[in-house]
Length: 440
Image 1 (spheres, rainbow, N blue to C red):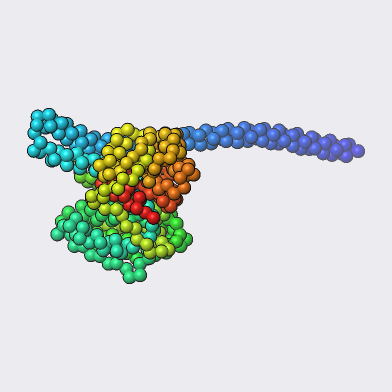
Image 2 (cartoon, rainbow, N blue to C red):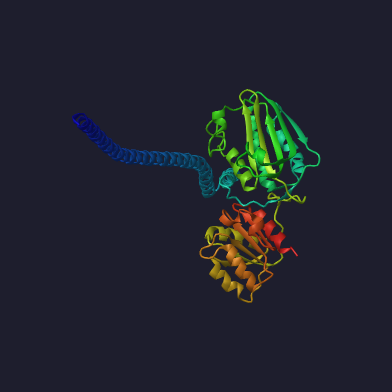
């Protein structure tokens, strides 16, 4: 009996010990769970804090890079434009002094200097608009082979005797959908860049080919779109570029040339022009071996090459027709009506759309409305729509320095409308006015 009681006591002790151990384990587990939860919360908060700090650092870096780019951009613009403005204002000041002194013998020389500086300023604004993809493009089907063949003499004169030019134009080349004038500028810019990279002479090879890009090709050209393209390949045997420089060539105002030898907008302009045209640019280069630039232009469906106006031509005289001039800048308006008067046109003037509508609703004769695109209040394009409700057959010539919605002329212009970009020569204006008035 005693032995059985002892056994029962021992079993009870073991049970109590086991229960105590279980309770201790449960308490430890509860404590571990509570600690784990606290540690998870702590680490989550730390991770979120690190994420916030990282995002803040990335935002600060992007802002710093943005401000650096803006500083580089504005600094380059200021440098170039101040030089050009000095050429204009300095030449005009000398002309004024010469005229006051009755000395007219060398006035034409300073007039030419002012005009040259103004043309350089205009070219710079066009390059800026091309870089930002905001220039007005008159995209039409273009015979690229004919364009490059027509540039042969100009390219050889530009390259000089030290550079051997080879042109290989592909038979059966598709027409490209592009702006012919801007494409010619792009090819010339690329040729000049190649010449400058071949200090001791070399070979420049220009080739045209048809190509189609599929999804596999886009892995190597992630900024391109699938489709059919006309490609202009320009290869030189120059010094080539390092990967570091190659990664910056499309940046605005980045240039490896000496100060005063280049604006750094050439390649960025070409890149912007290509992207706005629906194409893209690819550059391959190796130090000591040369560079290849491939300009991809989307294929057009018809072959209808664009013919541009010869701005050097003397404007033909008018025949007493009446032009309504709508321009909010009084100086520009003065120049336009002055040249129209000298060419034999009558004119009406308006500083905004409201003034123009008063004239349009009157019985006065109007053969052409010449309007700025960027007017106070309603835009020139909106004015044209209202004007055609009043006079359905009215022809409209837009003039603009920049129009955000006019980057694609085919979409911006309706039949019987055209656009002339500022700045323009007065002869170019007169030629375009005559051309539009004579349109049937």
